[in-house]
Length: 195
Image 1: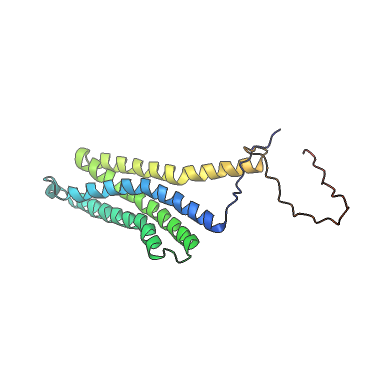
Image 2: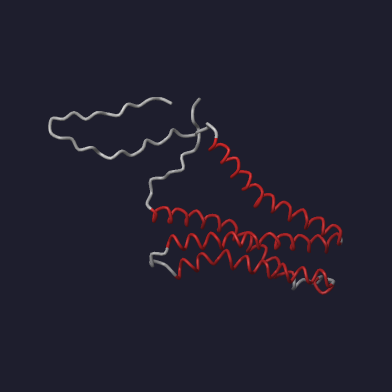
């Protein structure tokens, strides 16, 4: 049976790896920042609508908390760019990637209640408290499922494949040190057996 496990080794230096990881992180942040900016803009404009003065205490509290969560999420998602700019060309790329990844993870955690609060508020205002709580709870479950449970399941499936006999790429040949031979001596090639 063929071995189909993915090859994870890349032929790159630590600096090349840090550059690649930072590029991938920035691509992720671009997608996320767009959603956060739209949410933040929506929340900012709500306070200036005609219906805003009619909100009850619960709705106003939900609004303020959600707005503050959106601000914190936006700050966390833009912090990697500020960190990179502050430490540019100081030999700290690997550290920047590590800290930026943590900031993005915390930002995703803050974004979950921000999304939940915004849906709760809008549905509460339009259909009533019960509908708002139901929609907010559903939003919370969807976010936790897609952002928390799904990565866990994918990671677990990957570990199960690594433990099995499934490979997607052939195994890499190990790098062997060059043997120096005495003049006239024949080099013996190691025998290769199929396993």
